Each structure stands twice: as C-alpha cells, then as structure tokens.
Length: 92
Length: 348
View 1 (cartoon, rainbow over the protein chains, first blue to last red):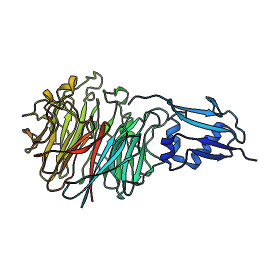
View 2: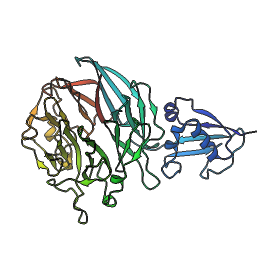
View 3: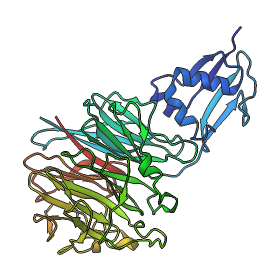
View 4: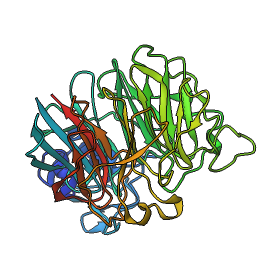
C-alpha cells in the first residue's frame, strides 16, 4: 500500500495555491519524496519552500510528525504527518 | 474608461479604482495579503503582472486577467545555485517581451507574457559582475527602459552599479555613465560604481533619458553616451522617483535632503516639476501635508498618461497622494497602507 502522508502548510502558502492547509500526499517514501509529491500537486510551492540550492529556506522549518527534520531522506510511514512551518522571525 | 492605481506594499497589494473623473475612489484588496509586493506590470497578452517577495518564502511572478484572481507563474525568474534571487523590482513590457529586473542584480526576460523566463546572460554575467556591490537598498536591477522604434536598444539601471545599455537586444551590455559622479569609485572598473535610483525616458525620443541618481538629477539626449546635471531650482538633489507625463512632457521629482537624512528639506514635502525637459524646476501644487518628513521610494510614483495628467505617489508612511491636473492640486487617498514600495496606474 502506498504511504499516505498529511502535509500541513502555512496559511500564506495555502492561500497562494487556493487550498486548505492540509494536503494528502501519496507515494512518498521519505520526507523528500513527500515534498516532491506536494510539489507535483502544487508546483508553485517549490520556490517558497526550497532555496536556489534545493535546501529548505532558512526561515522555513519542516517537521516529520512532531520532530524537526533536517535530513529529508528520513523514511515516512502511512499515516505520518509532515508540517511546513513559517519561522517566528522577521520584523518588517 | 476606468483607472486603477495599484499600490504595492510590504504587506500586500491594494487597488484603488475610479472612473475617468478620478474623484471618487474605491479600495479593493489586499491581494497577496502578508506578502511583499514589489512591483506590477502588464503583459503583451493583456494580463496584469505582479511580483511578490517574502522574508520567508522568496520571490515570484503572478498573472491575473482582472486584478482579483491571481495565478503564480511556476517557472518564474530564477538563478541557478550560484546566486540568490531576493526580489523582483521591475516588470517592463516592450513589444512581445517582458523584462524583469531583480535583486541580486540581473535581468530575466519572457517571450510568452510571463509564463516562462530566461536569464539575460550578457548582463547577469557581465565582465564587471564580480565587482558589483549592494547599496543600502540592496543590489537591484530596478529599471528597464526600451526604444519602441528599435527593439535592440535597451537600458537597465542597477543601484550602486550604474546604467547599462544594450544595442543588440540584450546580448551585450555596456556601462553608460559618463558625466555622472561615481558613488563608489572602482579603480579596476571605473565604469561602474554609479548609484542610479530611477530612470524615465521619452517614448517618442527614447534616447532622451532623465535620471534621479544618488548624487543628483541628470539628463542624457544621446542615449546615455553622456549625462549632464539638470538641477536648477531644486532644493536638494537627492531623491528616488523621477516620472514623466508624456503628452505634456512634464517631469516630476520629490527632492529629499541628502543621502544622510533622506527626508524633505525642513519637512517641506513637495513635488517639483520641470516643463522644459529638466532645464529648470519649480515647486508645484497645494494640498500636500505641511511638516511631513516622509519619503517616496523609486517605484512609488506614476502618471496615468491621460490628457489631464493624473500623478500618483505613495509614501513610506503608507499614504497615497494624487493629482488630476498635472500636480497643481494634490489630494490624499482616505486610507493608510503599509510601507509603499510601488505605485503603478492601469487605464482601460
């Protein structure tokens, strides 16, 4: 059975792609694979989550279930969650 | 006819709509709430264009047919791994081409009304590129001028670097700043280090260009081969926007006191105009607030090009002022916005 992972995105990005904040992504075997699946559904999001080097942007954080994840090759299982968070930073 | 004043701010885009009389305005928006909206444009296919940026999420181009529903371009301007694209500061259309000027400084162009973009390598990898240094506002290619009669002729203004011109449709570029003092002298490349703030040209005579520079107001009549200082009558020669109502030829600037202070001299917030191509300037108009120490950024002033010249500008304090008689009488829109980065006008 293909893993189904619920990805939660920030409201600013959800508004951008005219979707709800929770998006089900199927078929990803890792966090990276899940994000690729998300970008297949909403290709506009790639540039907002990843920088020009293909890394998660400095003020964006990615959680797998409830743990901040830095290694995007971390495996995922059916029913897992991936959460993209906007850092509490800024000042403008 | 309808008039839409598009206001790009640090927290979204606002659209102020009126009929031809331009006396009663309605507010629409914000669109892209929470996003930095750097600038607007109009694509060859008629679509409206808008550029967003973000402290968190990077920059993107969006298209709309009605200024209400927006669709982000997926394959927007983007460098490879070697360089960051922080902001998109101008979207300029000439013929079938849309030019995007960005920070870190460079140009991109689109031949399909903004759907896909390619880098302008001749400028982005210019032989002087490694010596380009950012100014206070970043390292931005912020203005593109074109020649309606010669698509091969293009000018680009880059803050803290200078004006470049291409005579071959953007393949090769040459610094063109003779007559302007350098803001930061580069001994190895004395042809860069010029801090151009804004440019405007005469569409019927595109080689005549006016320039609000960090170090004064200048004019060229030979396509930027040589520049001359044109500041007679100005209380200060620093400022950001320079704008032109093409039917009348009237020029507009908003002088600020030196780069150290960047405020209206003694709080005398005023628009200065020239009716003789920059040879002389005079203070114009009534209706602007007394004792205002606000500023106006380089993309935050526009004319509507109607016969009775509509002139609009937005302040760093979030207020939009406008005139419908070429600047003789000024009015204030009844809203206060976030810090205003861009004001552009669309008439249909």
